[in-house]
Image: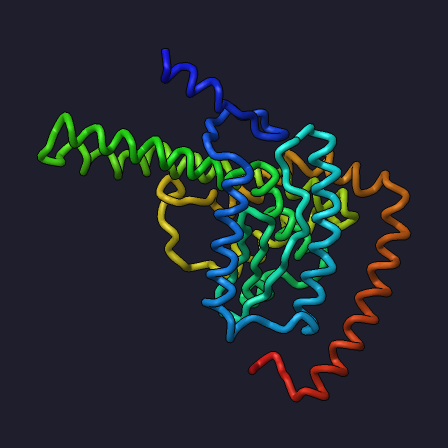
Length: 290
């Protein structure tokens, strides 16, 4: 009876996909956890963080702020009352790693290695839309809640079998049959929500598909192993998934008259920022190879 109440009391629905999942953490706790991790990462990467007036930082901030605005509109339309409206932070880290990630509390990190595959603002919007979508869907809270259940069950097996045999079987099995499929499902949800965020922010949603095509081409020959052992869907599946979502995303992008004017403003802002950044970098002696 108690377990049944605990299950249904914390049952939640993911936006757009309507997938039912169990989240026992509160948005406030998730934000505190994200804020704590943010401070730790800022200390860890302190020497590699690009300055706020660097061209890459300015671009990420400019694109990210538009995605953040679109996320607030998305949350209102989908009645996501737990979505945090705290301002997003955008931190660009000098690194060869092609990666970006988000923390609860609205903290986005972008590694400069990503720019091997992200070549314009539309493509950057596809990546940032994906990251912000994770927060909209509260995927961090879902992951923590699932880990708590697995941890509890694992400890209970030690009472039944003090030898630890069941424990040694349960933990890998839980990862293979629950955590990895859920992680891939969350990534697919973030792809879907992210492409709509990009379109709502007046960025070309087709660019998100190009990013994964760029990655697939750039990583040809690498052994990634079977998809069922991965936390992310394969590039092939992700590229195909966009075909399902693109008609609706393009309808938003092309039917909104405001996007024509906004994209003109984007071009002007991008050109002005590039001139200013180039001047600053010339004066400081910075170059992309440093």
